[in-house]
Amino acid sequence: MGEKPFRGAQIYEWLHKKPVQSFEEMSNLSRPLRRMLEERFCLTALEPVRIQESKTDGTRKYLFRLSDDNVIESVWMRYHHGNSICVSSQAGCRMGCRFCASTLDGLERNLLASEMLEQVYAVTRLTGERISNVVVMGTGEPLDNYDNLLRFLRLLTHERGLHISQRSITVSTCGIVPNIRRLADEKLQITLALSLHGVTNEKRMELMPITRQYPLDEVLPACEYYQKQTGRRVTLEYSLAEGVNDTEEDAAGLIRIAGDLHCHVNLIRVNPVPGRGFVPPGRDGVLAFQNKLEKNRIHVTIRREMGRDIDGACGQLRRRHMKEEKREA
Image 1 (tube, rainbow, N blue to C red):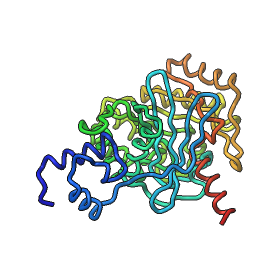
Image 2 (image 1 turned 45 degrees about the vertical axis):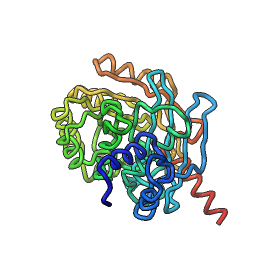
Image 3 (image 1 turned 90 degrees about the vertical axis):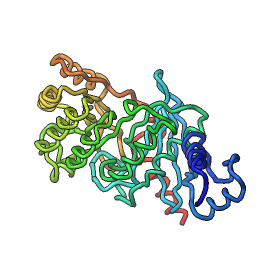
C-alpha cells in the first residue's frame, strides 16, 4: 500500500495486543489509512449471542455468532494458576464420537485462524482479565483443520501479540495419525492430548468411529513419535461412562497403554448428553478407577468438573441454540 514499514508494526499491535474490533479504533493511524484498510480488509469480530455463568464455580460459556451466522462455543475457566479458555476449531464436527454433542449435527465448516484467535480476544475483552492457558478442546477436531490450527498457534504465541507460552497450550485430538506426525515435526512445545476413551480397537470403535481409519496400533506409535520429537509428554483423555469403559479389563488396558507411553492420564466423568445414553460413574467409582492406575505407578488426575450446570459438554449450548432458532423460524 506504499506505507512506511513501522505502520505494519502498529497495525499488528492493534490487532493482536490491544486488540480492537474495527480499523476506526486504530487511533495512531491517519484517517485516510484507516479508510483504506476498511475498504480493502475485514476484521474478524465475533458477536456474543449468549453468555452463561455457572453458579457453582464461575465458569462462563460463550456462544458467538460468526459472520456467516454459524455459531460456536468458547468456555472461560478460572483456576488458581490463572485463567484458561477452551476454544472451538470448527463449526460442528464430522468425527461422530458417540458421547459428544458437537458431532450430532455434523460439520458446517472449518474455522479460520482469525476466528479461533478472536475467541481468545473476545473473551479477554468481555472479562477484562488476561488469559494464561489455552486448550483447543471445544467443538470440532483441531487436527481436521490443521493449517488454520497451526497459524492460530503461531499467532497466539507470537512475541508481538499475546505471547502466550507454547507450554501453556493444549491441543486435543481423537487420533488423526498423519497430522499428529506433522505436528510433531513442527517441534512446538504445546501439549498434545489424545482422546482415548477405549483401550481396545473394538471398544474404542463403538465410541469413536475414527478408530476404523486409525486403529490404536497406528495412533499410539504416532503419540510416541510426538513425544520423541518434542520432548513433551502426551496426555491421555479418558471419559468414564458407567458400565461402558470402567471395568477391571479397561483399567488393565489403560495401565498398559499409559505405562508404555510413560504419559499422564486425565480421567473425566462423561457429560450426559440427551439421546446418547451415557451415564457418569459415581465419585466412588471414579476414585476406585484412579486408585487402580496409581497402584501401577500411572500419573493420573481426575479433571475438575466445571460448568456442568451451564451445558458443560462440548456442543450442548450450540445445539440447544440452533434448535431454538429452528423452532422460532
